[in-house]
Image (tube, rainbow, N blue to C red; front, side, top):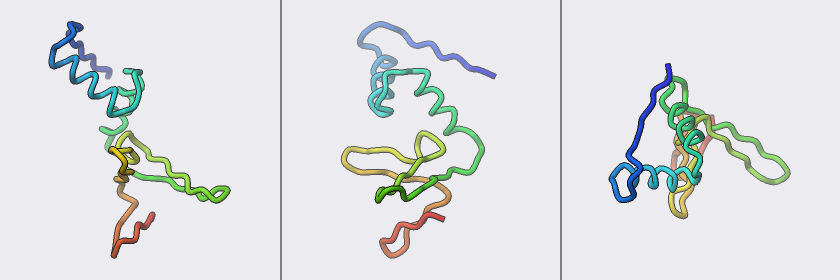
Length: 92
């Protein structure tokens, strides 16, 4: 079932500020892309980060919008299959 949210289009409204905040947080102006990322985050599935070491580079990919994200100069990882013990990050 699809849901639709309509925001006002006048320039200074809280709704417009919210939309601009979403665009900045997701690093995209594509509202369909943002909506799909939000929807995937709301699914009742295990939140996982997949990883692969390829050509000397660790590649990590999250299964939803919040698994792997950048917050300022910090890379934020949040998933059911990672743990931190004694300052060591472990992928399960």
